[in-house]
Length: 57
Ligand code: FES
Image (cartoon, rainbow, N blue to C red; front, top):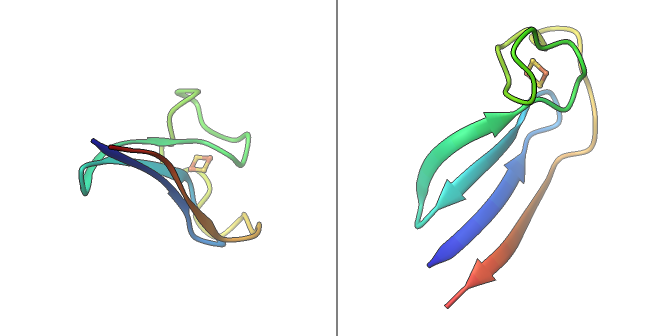
């Protein structure tokens, strides 16, 4: 199983398991459905982009 955390500079933290997106976590603090992203960040949020593989086997 491969688990990847991925974030673009203007969006949520996406969690992928075996290349399939499972859910998106809010990292802007504006979601009305925390901890999940509800798209409230659009046009209001900028943070560093990154991608991390946290488990692989
Ligand atoms: S990152 Fe999408 S609502 Fe916060």
